[in-house]
Length: 276
Image (cartoon, rainbow, N blue to C red; front, side, top):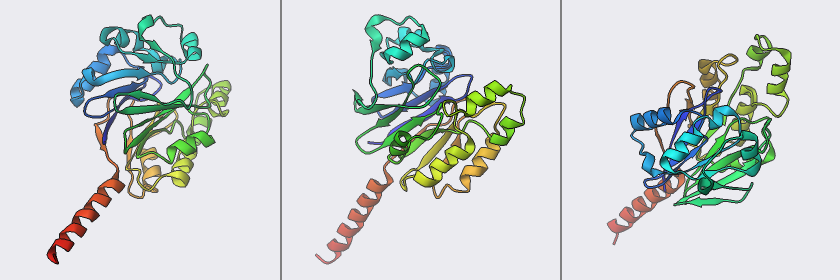
């Protein structure tokens, strides 16, 4: 089953990612206002009625800012760990709170959401993969390092939202105070362009059709630079930059391997029919 994906917003001012099929969808994080989420989904032709749950990666404001209103208005279940909920200090309706644990998949309609732990300066941070029967999407942002778990999940993805937060030179020569530069680069902060590119170059699966580079720093990165850097190594993968100001288009992700097999079968059957 194919999946539809979009970044509704990506950056330190708010993060929210849509993944769904024809009937069911989930949001990963809710870091923009409910109103803005509605507006952007409407522009994309996405229906809020299809959203069946919100999964929260960690408690930082840019990932939960719109959560309370969104969950209450649409009575959306919120999947959030106890550690993240405690650190977030937000009041959600009790009947809408659901817990998850790392490496324990959760079924939402025909979608299978698998959380796994990551390195980030938060209480209990997680990344996610979202899968149908044939397609897997990864949401990999706010990463201190490309750990073995990230590599393992990245290799399975037909498309991924992957953090490329900062250019090392821009960060080091920029105006941020030393303690903030250290926090960003200390292995529990964010992935640099170089670190993300290394992950992509070494571990990109041949069937990955889209890479949506996400959570770019407003002050320490350049979307033009990032796209040029990754496009040099894309090998057929479409490189997209997720904006901190607007939604991306909706991307339709299929398993090209399955499609290729079907095409070969059709051709073979047609050839056989010529001699039957």
